Length: 449
Image 1: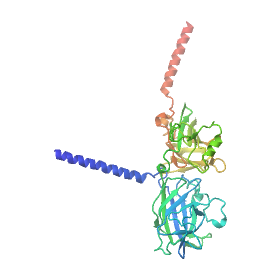
Image 2: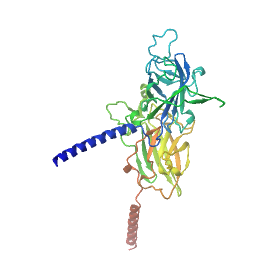
Image 3: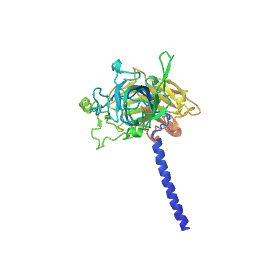
């Protein structure tokens, strides 16, 4: 019996260890999964369109297939490691950030000789003879749902010392994508079906010599150590305003990061912001209890007979960042009955196919698509009107508040459910009315006698 117990204990220990290892592996493989955009990714196509005496000419195109996550200024940075001793002779629509050691070349000098080149997009206004289609936007790429025509970025490279046939050329390795900081993990390049190209008149079709595909996925855990936004709540039926949880994105008394926030009434505020540098994109936030760069406020504003109204306000507390082409994703069961919206663009997202409970909201171009840095103009707002569904509608138990909110693709921290503004208890109101009635009757009788 003792031998059986020892063996069983060892077996249990082994099973627990195995389950732990499997759970770790599962977490690692799914940490980039986004439930509201399960198939979202950035796909990089590397099309070899022409052979040269010592290599090839390639067009590299990045497609942002993410529904609501875009790449904002200062834009993307793409890197990789060459498989052999390749060099970049020339680039169009992009440039390498470093040339590297090209001292062994006589006469013509390559654009980049590094084993691990880093490429960035050119800025708007680049001369036309240095451009190709879909280039030169400063590395900014919009999300697929927001503006699919601008969710693409391309550049062209002339690669040397690379091989001149499908059998001698080698696929680059170790792709990295920063947009503009960390957060993306890129898989290995895989040989795919050659891309086909059509002439402008559509009468002729050509295809690439070879095509390599790279898929990059985003993880908020890799992008930042702390959250970047939070949510506060209020309602017409309760005077309580539920703020963002304290220290959501940091704490003011954090001794390891002195000067990490600025008081809005501080003297010489402009000089304080300027001292942190124009090229430093780490948030410099207004001192608040939550210390988040972005706060989203959801206010249940009015209740009609057949409809109810919500006001949404986005406030920027970051003195160092203007958010251009921002977007907001909100999940709430009543979005299947959204009747009217004001001053925002709206698109329904259906990550669960038949269930229409997720909405994407973004600003109207040239009106409020630009969220200014912290200050008097650092906010945008809209109002939404929902039609009530008698089978589901309720103000009880926090039903009127969103299930989750994303700003620019990052999940915002919600207050705990037990802190939501509660609906006044009807039975309490009845008790108070009964007491008032008894007291009034008592006073009347006393006065009468």
